[in-house]
Image 1: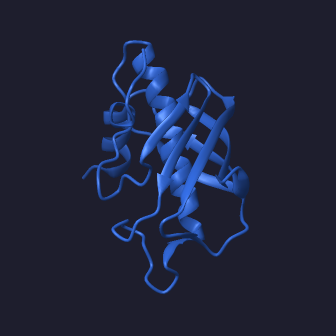
Image 2: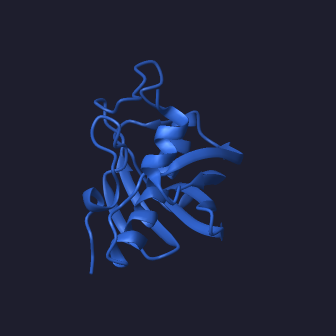
Image 3: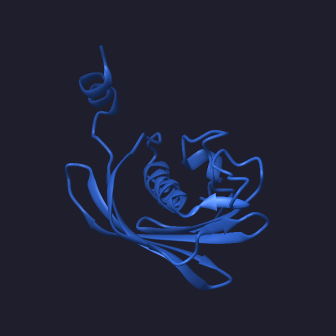
Length: 152
């Protein structure tokens, strides 16, 4: 079964930064966005999104892969947490307004604990402009995790 992006990620506007799910399976996916001035992170001086926002674009694309895996298994989607990144490089100063970008993510390591590592890239017209490895965590019991770490 094919799911929409809204069915796979919990992000909602204005925090939802990716627009479209291009392809997805259990371990990899491709999402697309077109930068607009109403984006939460739009910068008037740069006329686009600052380069560091690429990390969040990658994280949301990872959420789509995780959501697809859970939905395909008959489970509800869950929250995931971005733990950090290794070697984020971006060859552009910003993601330009009016331009479309593809975000590719592929899981390269997963543990039973919920910890995963994804190889990620962002491309503009098939030319890679940003790369990183993201460490993410999807706790087995998200309510208990949130209560323990963010509760009273």
